[in-house]
Length: 267
Image 1: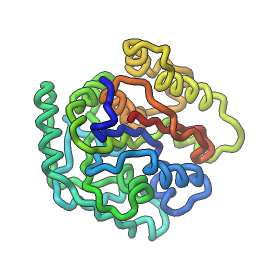
Image 2: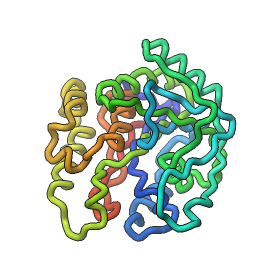
Image 3: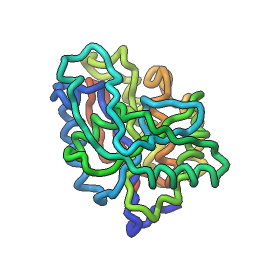
Image 4: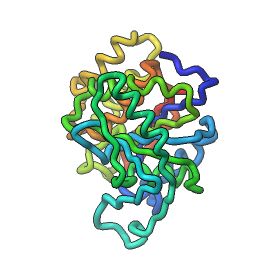
């Protein structure tokens, strides 16, 4: 499926950084902060945003359905101002219900949640990207078990959103070994996995089946489990890819907390 430009649909996978640190001007996030502030210039202005965050897992795909979802400060040990961050973006029940219908049409059982709020995988990047918080947002959960193919299929079910002016934002981290963040010097394991991931997502010579197979079997990539001891920060990428099944474009390739990280855009 190719996303036609006249649909207005954009799909973007990003690193969202460490907890609230991008909003606290942390020096290990300066490249990411600059990227997040500038990336809207490359996007069609969306009417709505759908966020697939690494920080929400449910037994079945679940969608926020509140008119005004609260913020969830799902991080610990930071300065008091980290718990005073405000991002009062509205929800959008119409889009949530449409997504629910699309999932059911593809025989994917799903549900709405009218009480769940927005976690930091949502409000940290969006406060930098769209600081006025006027664009309606909903979150779509990952699914317990974190099966790669299941998340690609979840993305495939969202293809019919092409008639909406929507940004689908996969909010995760292309490298997420928390024990190694902040280390100085090059990390060969990080770099090898990064090279594998960029090739997987961008190489036009890979067939759709080859690209899909690499993503489904991502654990076979160089140093995969070193870079992702758990996979929740990678799988928003699988959902994004499933929407298009096309090569992406690298729009960020920099250092975050001392590690090479990247962002991909389909447009």
